[in-house]
Length: 109
Image 1 (tube, one colour):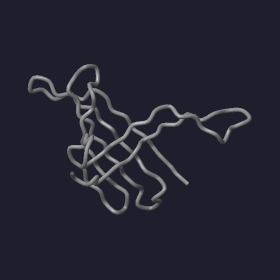
Image 2 (cartoon, one colour; image 1 turned 90 degrees about the vertical axis):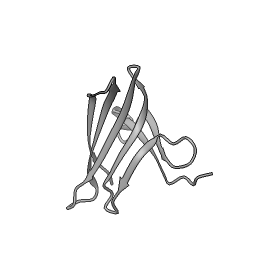
Image 3 (tube, rainbow, N blue to C red; image 1 turned 180 degrees about the vertical axis):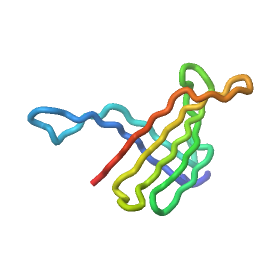
Image 4 (tube, one colour; image 1 turned 180 degrees about the horizontal axis):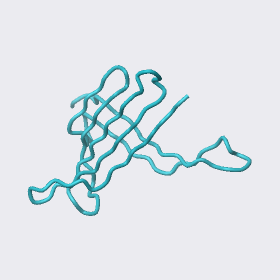
């Protein structure tokens, strides 16, 4: 059995308003695994600064065979700021087309 090389869980949150303004509610969650069982990552590259690129299979975006390309860029002047770009690319009959692009500007503390 192959050892799990990389695992991360992406959890998207919705902020709340009102009395619990510092709370958040879970919107969605997804997992990425490289190596081991349940492998959905085809390629992965990581830099110690936190930058990475990941290419993985997605289970049928609109019924098509789809790849997800995720890039994470970290601000070299402030490592608490990052930009993630996720591209969903469909592969059909020898054609490659961009189906969707998501951009997240993130800050953590």
